[in-house]
Length: 516
Image 1 (spheres, rainbow, N blue to C red):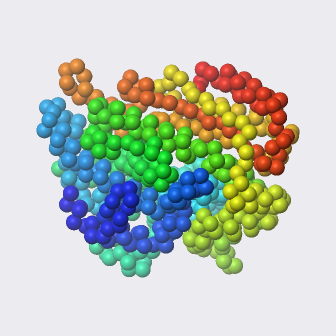
Image 2: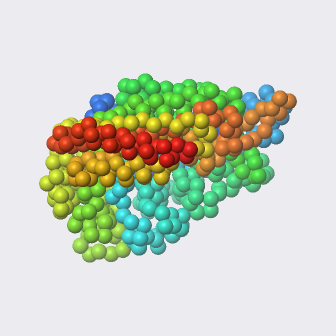
Image 3: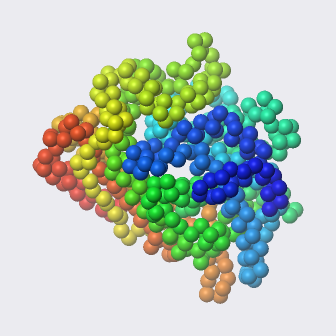
């Protein structure tokens, strides 16, 4: 692509080899808010099970950007190859090479910055995020479109990512680190829309080959979609490599060869050819295996359960009555204009290690259960995991790709198991850990298409959601149910209690059999 001429810097990566960068990307990477990702592990406690899994969200973000660009280049090449090979190509878009370089740069930046809002301990920090009401009160004037998109939903790390994307861009412009030409070469709102397609206008319109098209569906699908996207493609390879468990392997070249850009109702989409279904299944199986063998490893989940228990206690802390952890970083003269600064200060200060060793103990010291909480935290630091006292694995059969996780089943199971345990041990000393794996998670949201061929060798364009006849056999939904218990209380769980828990699980499973 012509854009290759802008790739003037490089970084060596063990997964992708040479990752090339533009001047604009280097300036975003050099910002402290991005550099802090070096201190946030990709998988919080996985290194306690697989010692080499100490890789961070920094290199993962670079990897996602690299894959996103590879996908775009292959879309261009495959459109030429597909139209030359097939007569019926009315749905295929042949002018990907004419997508403006500004939009290519926006895609790469979106891929690079998609995880920038992750706090310390990654997903497990999300429980500390302030309430929607508190956040809106402080920032709605600065980010009106963001809060219009959020509505009444809870604040998540993806929303912090959008705030940081805009913040870094504004700082680079203000400090003169981006030249005027560089500023004009990208639209930061487009970057934010590619990360979160519901943001702002929900479209990126550009004129290609004399026709105005919305390219947002294709760009968003490259980074985040079901069942395959650049994010998943990188973390499967990276987490498999650094854990040493070779089960996240898939044929990326086969996937790259099978993608084509398609046009429908003046919108561009990413599509897979029907011949790629076996490779898609291979990818789905690789992901499923990595979840069951690595992410859901009992010891890894035990440490996560311990942290969850501490976090629940910390959220009841007296240090922040309004449960806004960022306010502890406000300067003495509390002004609304300082709130964004204190968010930045919090994220720049709190690495994984600082959060565990300094902030969390400080929060617990103001908690009603500080002694119990600190003991659990010390056990976590000393690598003394809770015991797994119960485990059940539930596999759903005869599914179609639109069948997902039954949240009511999970909720009911956790509720009734808690009622059994709460009479014999305090809830801070145990955790009911229900992890799930849905091969086609969020399939109803994906905008990826499937090009299918009929008996007359003619292609038709279909949404993935409507291709159950070809994909249902690859669907799987799994529930991993475990109960972890502080070793101090191991003698209180006897066979009678375990039998009661098993009977509880079977009863609820029978009630939901037709739904899961």
